[in-house]
Length: 272
Image (cartoon, rainbow, N blue to C red; front, side, top):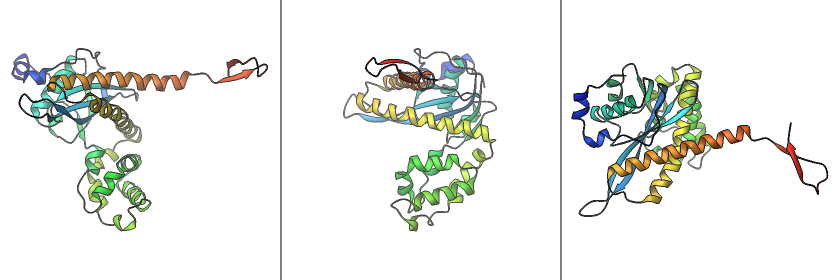
């Protein structure tokens, strides 16, 4: 990862230097990082609240484990934004990122050796009339079909079957050129199977955290300023990461119980 000089860090906007002090140090090596934006309402001094953007991210390790990386002010675009992100990640122990799943090519300019992959949401969000809204309604199923496919042709067939089986009917299926729509995912399909699986896992984690984050932001309402919104998003991600990991671990280690003796006694022992 490209190192920033002290002078470069001093020139950054103070808000871009916001550090998530409550977050633990991160791992050094991530196979993929996945970025997503969340709109939040921030109170204005004079007038109604306004919508501003907070970007958050998840990192997937080579062994398939994952971590919520944090949150940053602004949309995930432009060298100034990425300079702030990499400075934050670098200060918290990140040494290498192989893939960055985001739409902005500037992400690679400040992360030496990283490769940019378009997000599934970006590819399926392109406006191909008249079925763009249909795909939007089927967003979760469409993303799942595309990321589980082995290539562009397989993804196109999967999407056609998905739309054909939906309430939108067969007429909507043949309208767009799915090969053109999915062309942006060719770098993803070129990855080896186990690496594609890691990218798919990261997308799954984003969905799980995204649902919880949307609810938390909606319950909170307008924030006092953008810095407080970024801090709230980062804390929510950290909390939800621990909850999801604990839930997954408890399902693995929880012993199965079976009744022994008479039914009235109600004794239990671990099942085999």
